[in-house]
Image 1 (cartoon, rainbow, N blue to C red):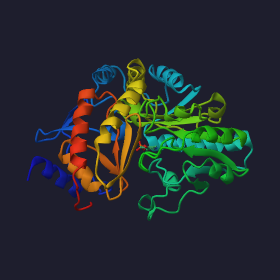
Image 2: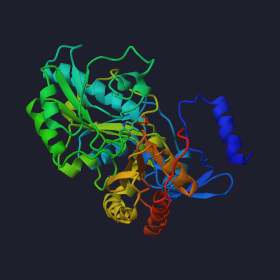
Image 3: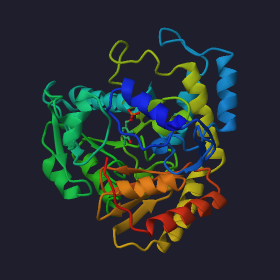
Image 4: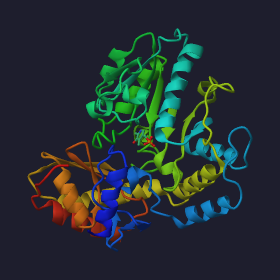
Amino acid sequence: MSISQAIIAKTFKYGAHNYHPRDVVFSSANGVIVTDPEGKEYIDMLAAYSSVSLGHRHPEIIETAKAQLDKVTLSSRAFHNDMLADFFEKLCEITKMEKILPMNTGAEAVETALKTARRWGVDKKGVPDGMQEIIVCKRNFHGRTISIISFSSDAKARRGFAPFTPGYTAIDFGDAEALEAAITPNTVAFLVEPIQGEAGIIIPPAGYLKKVREICSRHNILMIADEVQTGFARTGKMFATWHDEVQPDMFIMGKALGGGIMPVSAIASTAEIMSVFEPGSHGSTFGGNPFACAIALKTMEIIQRDNLAQQSAEKGAYFMKKLEGLNNPDIKEVRGRGLFVGIEFHVNATPYVQALNHAGVLTKETHEYTMRFAPPLVITYEQLDKASEIIVATLNQKHTGAVL
Ligand SMILES: *Cc1c(COP(=O)(O)O)cnc(C)c1O
C-alpha cells in the first residue's frame, strides 16, 4: 500500500463518510502546484472551490498571518480589536456598500443574510413576524445548515433531515418572470447566485440580474446575491452581479475572502438594511477576529493591486480558446466566465475527472455531469498552457468506468 492509499484508508476508517474525495492526497502546496506524499505534482484547477484564488500559501498572506500570530489572534466581540475597523472599511469600499457583518463560513453568512431579510421585512416593510417569505432558485447551493437545506432541491442533501424551516419558495433560475409571479405581499427577499456554481456553472441569460434588480426594487424586496463562490474576481469582475451593472441590496461572501488559509465570511449591505441589528440580536465568537481580519484585508489589497478581476477575464478567455481543441462526443458544452469554467458531459463526468486527476490536473465534478475549473487567479499562462494540453489530450479520449 502506498502512503497515499494508507492515508485514504485511515481517513475512511475514522471519518464520517459525508464526502467521497477523489483519490489524491495533498501533502504540500505552493501557488498552483499541489504535491502528494509520493512527490507527484498536480496543477490545481479547482482551488478549493475558489477559496484558493490567490494560490496556495501566497507569500504575502503567509507573511501577514505570521506577523498577526505574533501580535493578537482573538478578541471575541466582547472587546474591540485593531484589525476589524480596517477590514470593515476595505470590504465596504470593495463591495460599494456601507456596512459589514462578519462571520466565518459561507453557510453562516447565508444564515445571517436570511435573518437580516426576515427582520428587515418586519421592521421596515411591515410584514407580520412569522409570515416572511424568501424566494430562492431551484438547484441552488447556499450551504449545509438545516435552514439552508430547507430550500435545497438536492434530495441527497435533505433526506432524513426534516423537519425543515418554512418560509421559502423556489423558482427556476434565470427566469425573471417567474420571480415576479412568485412575489406575495409577505415576500421580503430574493436570494440568488449570480452564476450557479454547484449546479454546474450555470450562467443566466444576459440581463437577467438587471431585470431581477428592477423587479426587487419595484416590489420592495431585497435582492441578495450569494457571491461566496463567484465573488472576489473569480468571474472576471470583482462580483459576478456586476456583469449586469447592478448593485444588489446585499452581498454574501466567503471562500476567497480568507486568502486560502482561513474561513472568513461576511455580508455587506446598506446602513438602512443593516440597522435591523441591535446588540444581542446576532453574532459569532470567531467572526471578525483579528487574525481573520488581517488575512482578509491583505487578500483584498492583493486582489485590487494585482487587478485579478481583469486577469481572470483575460486568462479565462485564453483558457476557453484552448478548450476549443476538445473533441469528444461525450462532451455537451463548455461554458464559463473568467476563470470559472464548466465542461458538461452527456455522460457521468466522474471517469473523466479521475482520468484528469491521474494525468496531473485537479478538478472535480459538480453533481454528475459537469466538470468544474476554478484555478487560482494567479495561474501563469505557461501553467494554463500545460493544464490545457493535459485536459484536451485526456478528455479527447473516451473514459468509462466505475462511478463512485
Ligand atoms: C461554498 C458555498 C457556500 C457555503 O460556504 P461554506 O463555507 O461551505 O459554508 C454558500 N454559497 C455558495 C454559493 C457557495 O459556493
